[in-house]
Length: 162
Image (tube, rainbow, N blue to C red):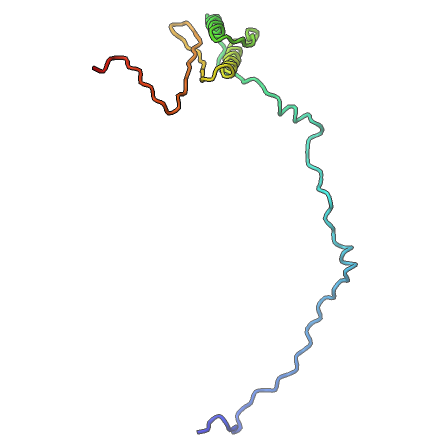
């Protein structure tokens, strides 16, 4: 059984044609011309964008006093009560804050409390918070001292246990 060894007039494949020449590619540009056409990177960086002079920087470094958005108090003894209580507080803690009586009242009050809080923070290690309280039409500045004891727990008995 010799099936595939003889050729008995079977159709044969057509002869292969010669390959066509490949399409011509673009010619290379010589190195000297290519270097002249390209843009080279500069050796130094471009200048940074900044405003003319230091005008904007001076404005940004300026600290402004906070703006008080509360209502102005017309009349009443709140202003006199505040400044008398504020004077006692400053005398007790021994601080000399700036005089804020020249400012409009609600704004001057806020500036005085802020300045006193800053001076107390510098002078005393414990935290002292200030706030304005009203009691039956009388106003007073209240100072709350907070001492941090860390992880130590203190028990101060008010009533005996036995």
